[in-house]
Amino acid sequence: MSLAIPTLHVSSVGLLNQLAWNTLSSNLCVILAEASYYC
Image (cartoon, rainbow, N blue to C red; front, top):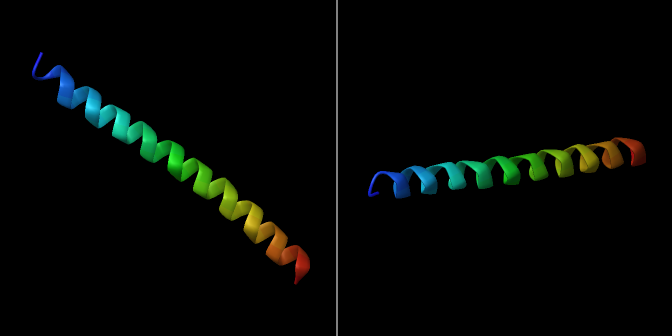
């Protein structure tokens, strides 16, 4: 049981990081596309 909790914690943190990175990446693509469009 004591091993399962840290593993779950690490995987959930990894999942959150992945989600945050995906969101940041797509937002960055949109921002760059708009910036290049307006330039």
